Amino acid sequence: MSATAPAVAASRWAEIPVATPGLVLDRDVLDANLDEMAAIARSAGVELFPHAKTHRMAEAGRRQIERGAHGLCVAKLGEAEAFADAGIERLFIANPIFGAENGARALALSRRADALFATDSVAAAASIGAVFAASGETARMMLAIDSGLGREGVTPAKAAEVASAIAAAPGVELVGIYTHEGATYGAKDRADLEARAVAAGELMVGVAEAIRATGIALPIVSLGASASARAVAHVSGVTQIRPGIYAFNDVGQIALGNATLDSVAVRVIGTVVSHPDPDRACIDAGSKSLSTDLVPAAAHRDEYPGMGLIVNAPGWVIEKMSEEHGWLRWHGEGEPTPLPVGTRLEIVPNHVCMAFAMLRRAAILGDGKVVETWEGFGPGSSE
Image (tube, rainbow, N blue to C red; front, side, top):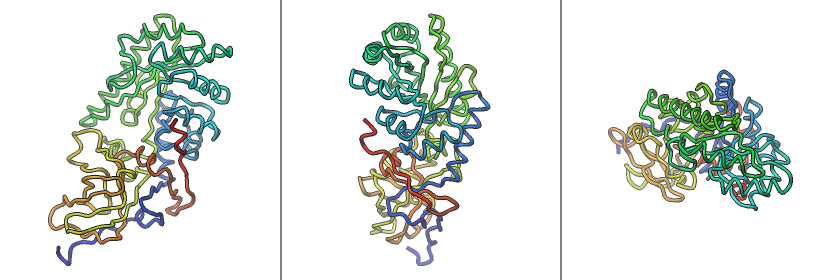
């Protein structure tokens, strides 16, 4: 290793006084991202229901509403209850729920918030509807459609039949359909991304038309992915978008062309704790801080290798993770840039949702200084 090898690049993020591994959030960048998506929703005439499982933070959710969102989408009843406690009045739990116990929680939630519930089967919808019907009330439900991801959701071909059966269940009002068009994350370039997004939007509009032909009003057609939100919002017949990552961005969004380094509102700060050889090192941010996720689209992994982008040490790649260690290897040209023990590194997560879920606390920057701390909901909120 040369004595004249370049030093690690200076980083304003790495200088923020937070214990490592730590999550830092720039409020000004966040606000710009929120304003951009709210403007897209307004221009397209669709509702914006950001997916708040990305952050699970009351302050972030309230900020989204203040800056133009119509409500929040969540993944679990516990998240919905926590956001209702924080004053959020409109909520969509975009994950199928089942059974009398969850039905009782859904009923209680619906009495203090305008709540929508998800299903993709007659049995699950009926189990929730029975609880509501016993109290003389109605559960407003959304039918999940599989638009190509192969996760939950009925196939488009079966949607009208299933929708009719669900709508006939006591205590249920079927008000819409939804999907997570996650297959758009596999796009190889911008043209492919837009084509996939538009196709997903048009598929959902077609499914809605088929269901309406059975006599169900079905006012809501909802799609949800930050990868595709900018395109699907403008598909005629789509009424709601549910992006989540857009608020903060990550390497996945950079790779897709939806973000730049300047529009990423968060960094994970890690410290070099071991540098035994010139071409390898370890940081104190492992899978419990960054996760082991790679960039979603395989087509972009050569350009964005590893498990996070190290901004202030180009050429170094987070090649492997254990729980509390990030294993760094030199992939740059020439001799490795020195990484003295104690060096603080600025890392953009590949998948920002996992950084929030793992670290659950963020130091908030205003005008470049830490002005407050936001805490995430506890483990119980995921139930």
